[in-house]
Each structure stands twice: as structure tokens, then as C-alpha cells.
Image (cartoon, rainbow, N blue to C red; front, side):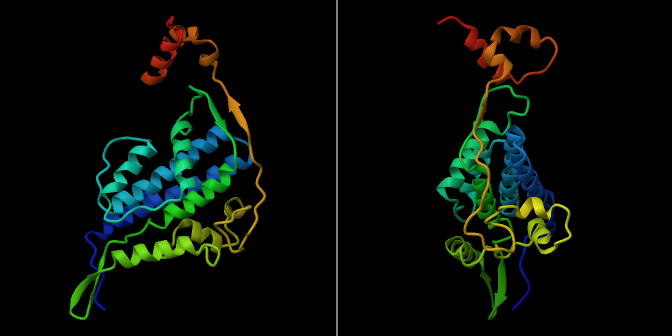
Length: 251
């Protein structure tokens, strides 16, 4: 078997350390926020981790993403350019839509809500998407020729997704989460494995997580006439200002 034929392993290393490893830590932060009932912070940290996992996959496969964006939809749409199809479960797709809607609401500019087992869904979504967070598209030199391993790696991912109950281990991915799970002395390990059916050494058939139902309306939604004065002192995104001006307009 000959050497791996990577286009540029330094770029792959950049993608792993800058995006995937950082996303792993954002994910743990999101779990801490949810457990503490900090739902806006949970939304933001969850969006951040999924965003970085998408950017990992895109960069590993040399898909250009040079525009500044927190839009998960935009990143997800770029995945159609990948040399393989990105398979996520319907529940993960729905969670991504939820995070795209509420994740950027860091300054409480618009209403938000959370209901259902969102932390379980985040655990599942992260487990699914991290399967693609390594260099899958390479060739090995075998029997006098280079042979692509892409299809083999795609099939390996599908098999792993279909056999979750037998093994939670993600093939070919050894990142921060795996490092933390393996080290019982790691300071954030408890936050990662607490009631986690997807990461940890135990095979959990049941997890007990609090299901939050929280909904809040921001001050401007209750009194949109404040907008004119507030704009004199702070920056508000253009789309937020437009939305509240439309509320003020008579029908």
C-alpha cells in the first residue's frame, strides 16, 4: 500500500484544528447552557458548533465559503457541491432550521421559544455531522495504481449511522470529544457525557434530560415606538429595524 495522496494536508490540519476542534468545545458549552436553562445561550452555542462542523466539511473538500455568514441554511446549501451526499436525519434537519431561526438572537432583538427534547436532538445532530469531519476524499496506491477511497468512506459512514445501537464510535474521527471521553480527569468531561446517549463510554438506551418550554418576547416587540430613540444610541441590524418599522405602519 502506497502513501496517502492528499492535495494539501496542511489545509486539512487547519480545518480540523480551527473548525472541528473548536466546534467540539462549542458543543460542550451548549450542553452546559441547556442544563442551566440558559436557552438563548444554548441556541447561540449550538449554532456556532454546527456552523463550524459545516465549515470543516466544506474546507476539507475545498468548497469555497468566503462570505461572512452564520446562516446554517447557506452552509447546508453549499453541501450540494460536495463529491458525496451529506446524509442527516430528519430530526437533525429540523434542529438546524430551529437554530438558524433563533441562534443569532444574541441581543434579544426578536422573540424566541424552545420546546421538546432539544438537547437530545443536538447530541444526535452533532454525532451525525461529525462523521463527515475528516478527509474522506483521498486515494491510496494499491497494486500499481491509485484507488479512490471516497465511496468506501461514504459507505462506512452510512453503516455507522445504521448501527448506532451497536457502536457509538465515529469511524476515522479522533477529535476533542474523543479525547475528553477517554480522559476521566478532563475538566469538561462530566459536561460532555452527562445524560448523553451519543458520546461517552456507557451504552445508554434511556437518558433523563429536562425538557424546557420557554418563550419570550423582546422589549421592542412590546413597544415598537422605542425604536426611533433606541437607534440614536446603539446599533441594531437593518432587518431588525425594518421589521419593527413595519409593525408601526398602519394597515
